Image (tube, rainbow, N blue to C red):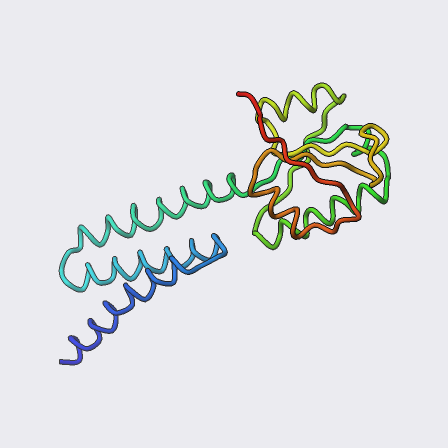
Length: 181
């Protein structure tokens, strides 16, 4: 009788954990809960006498899947920002403020920022056209803007995030609508 109740409690954890996975906004939290879901499923299979299924769930369904998901999440939650290498090399408080603002904004969405240096404007623009980077950032002296930097973004969702979250004084934003490739 107590075995039946404890088994029912363990089985009740399955839909609870599945629901929590779906409701997570942070993908890393979802991965942890997915691991818990797999462990509970493996436990249920083992208690019900399916040792082979429990072992398969533990190894493939939990460990391998979580590892692959972690790699996929890590590689997909990145914004690659192309800049002129001179801007990155010089100590410029305005550039550092822009990068800090971008990182703070992306942190809210569990993303990271990768800076990709380019030697000149032409190669920077070509990288955006070739979809090697998600955005470009050039100093206002090159773009004739009133703000210190101009950022061109080719990914609509990133543009929406930056438009609403990024402080307006650090850079002017534009959306690159038609990128070939």
